[in-house]
Length: 82
Image 1 (cartoon, rainbow, N blue to C red):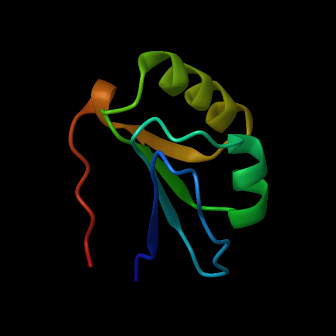
Image 2: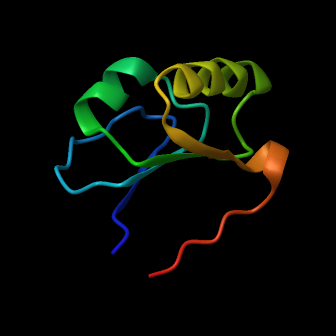
């Protein structure tokens, strides 16, 4: 079962214990490292509506923390099975 949270431009999120996918959209203004440490998602999806600058920074952080990610701008759509 996939439990997904969308963090949008408001940057507001609640840490869920069973969360496994985070969607970053709307150029959200968050401290990604802090969010990753509190939520511990299995995968992060970076929506194509985010600025390239933000996407590049997020990808570096995700690679450093060895967290799987999918950048829609680079790879294309992402399908989630329910």
